[in-house]
Amino acid sequence: MLKIPALLSQDELREFRGVLDAAGWVDGRATAGHLAGRVKSNLQLPLDGPEAKQLGGVILERLGRNPLFIASVLPLKVLAPRFNRYEGGGTYGNHIDNALFPDPSTGGYVRTDVSCTLFLNEPDEYEGGELVVEDSFGEHRVKLPAGDMVVYPGTSHHRVTPVTSGKRLASFFWTQSLVRSDIQRRTLFELDSAIQRLSADHPDHGSIAELTGVYHNLLRQWSVT
Image 1 (tube, helix red, strand yellow):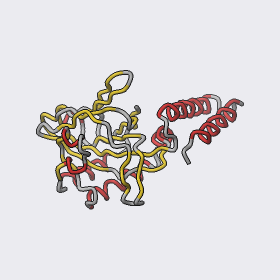
Image 2 (image 1 turned 45 degrees about the horizontal axis):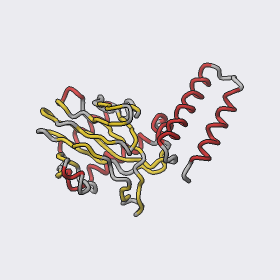
Image 3 (image 1 turned 60 degrees about the vertical axis):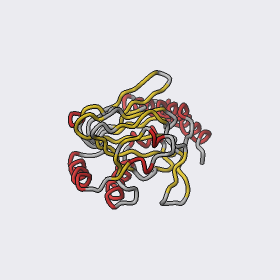
Image 4 (image 1 turned 90 degrees about the vertical axis):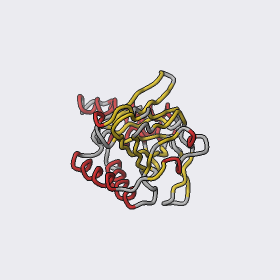
């Protein structure tokens, strides 16, 4: 589980809010599976609507040049971003996301290795609305500043607590990684981060090339392509 700060600038967030405030929202249960639909109460932008396509394109472009996202997720395919709104007690009970989602752009499927939530308004604009992710270490409660994103394994149980006042705006989407295993992705990310720190502190250290070779050999072995 990793926070990616400031994916969107303040100017971009203002543009997003203008589009989202004027958009036509629909019942979020329309895109939920049979079981998830029982615990889901929110609004979403239509998947094929111009607003979702416009804003989703900006997010995809920012992801493509964000080093932290690329290093931690090792993206192979990113599903088009979706957008939701919670208000008036809206909530999403405990669930695990579908393992596969159809990708309209290719006609194929995206395996949901990594779940992503990008917060689009400030935490003090609403009460509740925490993203709660469960793993073997317990519960992680997430409520980030506007423009920040959190990524976490798609295999995790998670929920959104009821929004009791104000409204919560976010984008959510899934990524199929080059490396399917959560543990292997974490190992590669930690190794890459250590190499970057060593390179900054000791740019001429002889171990940098050796460790970089280890990184790429592991990626070569673990990659699904």
